[in-house]
Length: 153
Image 1 (tube, one colour):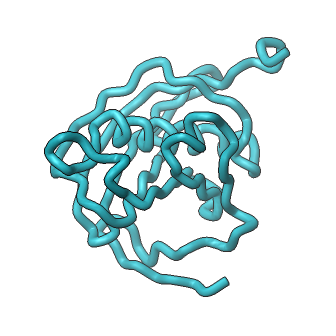
Image 2 (cartoon, rainbow, N blue to C red):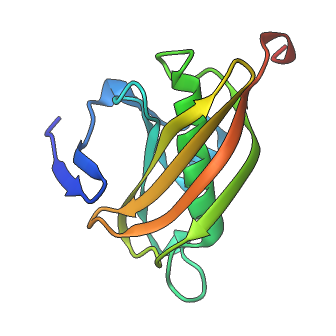
């Protein structure tokens, strides 16, 4: 697989990761929207989406709900990576505030989560959503909690 390097403001040398670090079609939502989860960083969860007409609103820009879903997923994956290198340990969102900065245009967008703090029960994670040209589309801050193993059965 060829490696593509794109330098984004705030994200240095973002590369198209090796397929072994990608999670595709894990959930119905992921399949419906079409984003891909990238765990190649090991500490920061990321996901990307190639924005097409099916992702836009009536103003032909990225729908805010899809932007929020991308941020939520990247932040939840970041939480998961704190306890599981595969990025699949389930976390749930307790709260998330999203700020929309610029319209999302067609092309590839990347959401990235960054752990800011927390403890044993909850994690505080910030997120950024950027277009491949470096434009900051949205940010978020959220509180995330690991789903206890006994709740999974």
